Image (tube, rainbow, N blue to C red; front, side, top):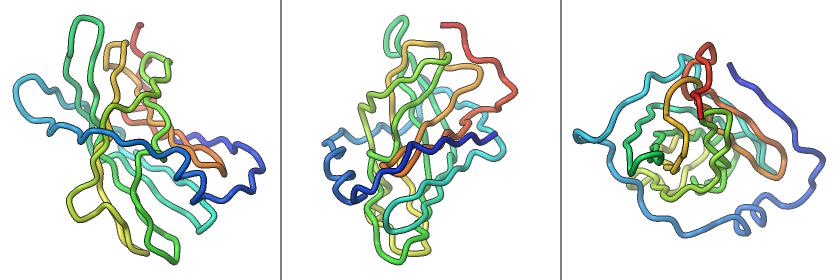
Length: 168
């Protein structure tokens, strides 16, 4: 299920918002190897955002986790961003506000990496990226990815909405 909330009425420039929220993050690791576990993703893991230039459509392609230490997990979510605006846009970490696990929002994204050659997304095309979060709740049950801009927010269920959140 997709839920949406409008965070109201800002007329600030999306480009300025993106610059003010940009940070230099490490590239996300490739989620392969024995330590990584794949999650079953929701059937319709998509959602949209508005920016000054027009609409963007996001999707979750896959999600993985590994335990870093007892009580701390790294989660990597493979995403897509469809640029439905008339101009080329950077696919940046600033769109990915939080990962919600165990009904807790984890907002620190320690890694972000667009696919090689997809750092900028031309109009009417799709760019792929990995975004990672460190969470303190077991990566099970309903997990959601919260997106946001200065025009609003969107929550995409990464895993099925019918699952109960993990106990945390």
